[in-house]
View 1 (cartoon, helix red, strand yellow):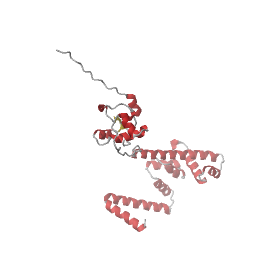
View 2 (cartoon, rainbow, N blue to C red):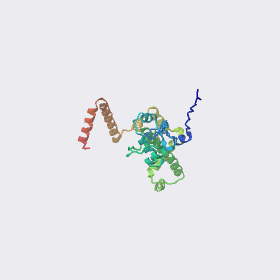
View 3 (cartoon, one colour):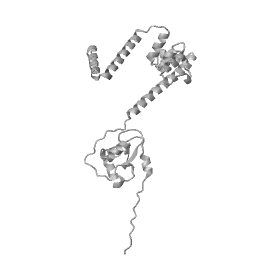
View 4 (cartoon, one colour):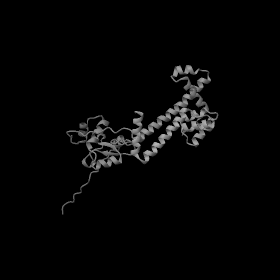
Length: 267
């Protein structure tokens, strides 16, 4: 009986350091933020190595599409070539893939998602509001020190009226604890023009009022007649609401209304 030959399977060495180096918090194919899988363009089973040129971050959905054959691996080569600042041909040589006659085009999808754009918009709006409060604080300090609004205007580009208004709103709500974070600076501006700013800003918050509704409530409380502009806005809002109701119930009729408006108003 001959000697028994023992065949030992060589375990493949996985280079975790390189995998971690290329890991990102968004999908390099579709741009979606969140959890990703580091995918080997040339699979490990086919001899693919743990080198940056062979690795790409994919969201679970795109990863599944790749394994289902719905995403061309040469599209991934294109994306990695941009990331690594190499040509697609160089990437193919490094990871030992055949070089095709033509590489498939892939649109750069590292663009922010809809959710990211909305968050960026909100963030900018918050920064803008913070800026107004800080400008108001500075304007108040300058005015308190007898610096004329006209001189501040000549230095900043803001009108004297704007400078006085910023300072006035700040004086009405000098401390953050007095402000309502869920309401805009414009809500606070309207409330600041009343005899009791704190009462009105709290009223606006508890009744979830828009700036127009807050303005209207204050005028009604003070028994001030609505201006022609206020009346026109109120009428326009009713028209928009009526149109939205029609649009929800009958989209075709909604389109007809829009066409009629365009014709009659010659838009």
